[in-house]
Length: 384
Image (cartoon, rainbow, N blue to C red):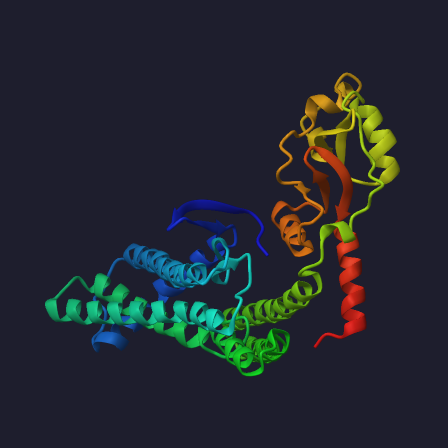
């Protein structure tokens, strides 16, 4: 979902990160708010904006954009804290091009938990909107600086806009999650509830795309492109969310042992890098290999290890010198849940895991084998 991202800090033990795409939306919001502040002043306070130097509008725009994302962060923090209180594992909060997202590493185990987690974010937005509206009113009545009052009014408006958008019953928006929780509670079937909620999400996404096309050809090209991009994102997210439920249903309770290959190709730590590349990488077409000595798993070596080593040194350097010895991220026990293995692959970006008992390698689990099983099971058992 995300490309380059940087962790900023932790809130209540939850890591907060920004994706590189966040810089784009900050720039766009700064530009938009800087250009529309005069209208906002007139709309909220019934009088023309005092003439300000151009640079002050840009400063106001930047402050408003950063404050808006602070509000988005609090919105997502509401989801994360309530979700964690309901037993869900929260991987973190990431701010990105389309706002923010609290990353769930486990799905809710009941319709009630889903409802409480989903409604927490909108509840935060309601509180923020009311607080900023009261502050804007108090500031206007007390004669505060017009730029400050304007920013407060803007934040009240934008939080209510976020609330209204997120409550649309289209999965995976908050309103769509509320809808899924209601359908789940009524039918007792999470898969069917997700299917219907994600369909609603796709219908809304295509409406946004169509609206964006109309806006583009009507002359509002920036608004049209933006609506279209949001629609495409929501459509992909709705499809992906339903696929996640299918994957969870197919893999939950299936042990890793069922999918692993016992005929693992291993490398000795004494092999030099040139022979490893020619005899293993080029021959077996894998990027990562376990390193085994006297029956014990010593580590693993991947093609990334060659990035800092000149080709002229490959003959003089051995696998044992450059291999990774920290096996925690790449190993999994044979009785572990296959769903856990898939989540571990997604977090680490690896397509193969080493299946181990104590320090002994007993097999290899590949993403290809898991996906082949998923495709067959979904094809044979149907998608709804």
